[in-house]
Length: 283
Ligand code: HEM
Ligand SMILES: N[C@@H](CC(=O)c1ccccc1NC=O)C(=O)O
Image 1 (cartoon, rainbow, N blue to C red):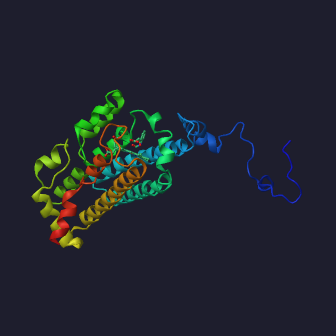
Image 2 (cartoon, rainbow, N blue to C red; image 1 turned 90 degrees about the vertical axis):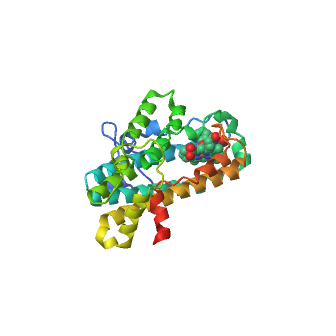
Image 3 (cartoon, helix red, strand yellow; image 1 turned 90 degrees about the horizontal axis):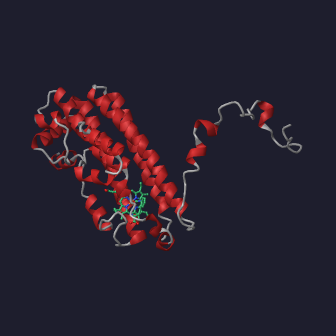
């Protein structure tokens, strides 16, 4: 017998709300919440460790979605399905915005709060995030040295190497430009790069042509702006990260072994799509 609410209390069951799930799929079943919500395992008794864990786990979930959308966007561009790619890239930027907003929650953690459990983290660090490294590789910030921390995880290494064997998102866009009749150095569109992309004069000229007459090169103009948008959000993520880190651990070395803030400041100099930024000076 279901318990009847006191007189006057509202019971959604009366208007048909389903209340019995013993033999039906429920909300929690579909989302596998038992698994997700039992995956927070603090190693200390510090109250803020739960915040720290949830912040990272939610970031990893958003990164999973970002990789999914980035792969689809790259496929769409390779197949000249540009409107579809635009939609996907717009979503990627919105996901980044979501990740950027999340820093506001973590920023409420003070050095006093964090030092209560930092030792428990051992040598673990975001530096070892497989999905983060895959995103960097998809976007073209490629560096084989970054595979090293994953050597204990053959599946992870396989994913990173598989990514290095594909054209980066930017290379895929340049191949599209070539199909549209632009001159692009063959190496750039034929060989997946294993290093960060550096400014190339022909690509500067390409974007200059596009930006000087958007109407004549609309698809490229649109994808160029989508990439700028994406990098703009990514830069904000890096900036939020380094500022939060300075606020919480000052200039201590990182648990991952880098100089900490000094390493992250260096990462602020990364340019994913250099020509798209540099061409603006010419316009
Ligand atoms: C209080 C919070 C945080 C602190 C103190 C912190 C600190 C650091 C430090 C010092 C590094 C440099 C590597 C090292 O030596 O450890 C690093 C790298 C990294 N962290 Fe964090 N972090 C924080 C939060 C986060 C969050 C919320 C994420 C989201 C997933 C994250 C993701 C990363 C990633 C991906 C790297 C590698 C960056 C790269 O190689 O460019 N961190 N972090
Ligand atoms: N590198 C941080 C530790 C840290 O933030 C961290 C540790 C384990 C898992 C994720 C982390 N987040 C980002 O680096 C530190 O040096 O305090």
